[in-house]
Image (cartoon, rainbow over the protein chains, first blue to last red):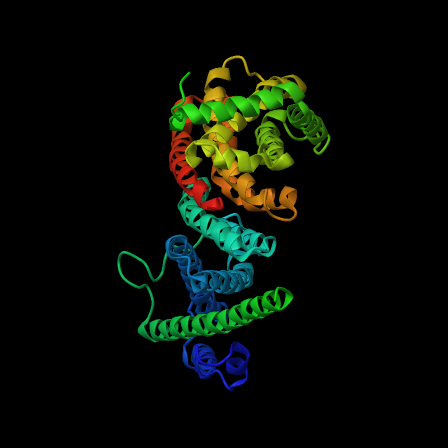
Length: 234
Length: 230
């Protein structure tokens, strides 16, 4: 690190974030204007290009949070903990996106905003799980203890997901069968697949941009706290 | 006099005995958890219309919600007693493996939770007029399997939240999502058993409970030392 964190933050435009925003815009324009509406679901199907990429980013974010926590336990590198913190927060935002976009589609297609389907329930509990993770982080002041606790909770959360999935799946399921991860291949016309993958790419870029911005914030906060601690104990 | 430090399980047993002795002499947490269980069993009865909904339909859900919350009360206490006069530090400098502290605490909590269930279950049968006689052994199996998973995760999180602000609020927020794969199978299996279905019909649920117990007993025992300061 050559420059101070605050100097870097002022340095100017975050080009990566800009690219991500442009890609998001392109994906939306293509999804709305240049991709035909679904024969049966009509315009409501467009939400798929938001819903599925959000779900992908949410799972990516939580998976990386758990991995970063696990590696932190051995390396104790504060950057890993800042990454876990940022990724979990961004993951919660995208999970919220999944939970909002799902009912918007569910109302016209299923006739209900919310059903206790296996995958909806899993996503909801995932959301609760990581909200708890963030609440835990906010309740611990000591940086090292916070990293330790969150690493353990993050790893146990990753172990929990298959169990929730299994129990709510046996309970009942109503969600459409996987369209992309279908054993007989992707069940969509080519033009929709292209749009979907464009959206997936754009959402992933946005994830990286948001995590980068959030990590910058976290390291500035830590630097400020260090500075304050150094000043109070000369 | 034997001066060699005790092994993993022997040390765990010592810690469990210590916790149970404290609990047995004060009885404060056990009695509160018990009263809470009985109270919620009674209060839930008035939350629905008994002429419209059969007791058999709501009892399993009420039973498991009650157990979960009274269990949390006991779990929270498990590390609360170590906060007084920094007793936790004494435990940490004791020549025992740190996994033993977890196993001992978890075992004491298991006895605590099962003790509450032992009284609350007959009370439920009494208040809701349920036919328990024939299914009591299968039901006990569900109870024990569910209680093991509950105390494994709960003990670990109680250890973590004991060192945070607002521990009594944070413990349920963290632990309840982890109780989903326990409460859902346990409540469903309980409902089937009470409806007079054979145990074999609930095997899928029992297998989930057993798998949860094994995975989280192992994972939490390994994870616990990581939550402690070096």
